Image 1: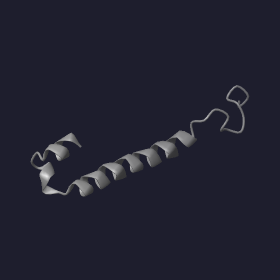
Image 2: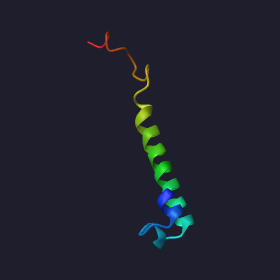
Image 3: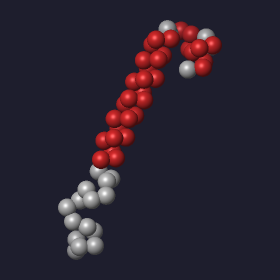
Image 4: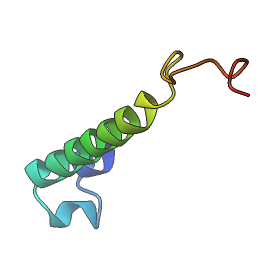
Length: 54
């Protein structure tokens, strides 16, 4: 965002709003993917403990 703010090339080719929207979209997608993968890694998520599954 600092490169956009200073007007450095090639960041000056798109408006500031477009870069802000792109950064927001990237963080949003990252958060959704992180949440999706973190759901299956919770303690107690499986039906029985691994010590008893044999």
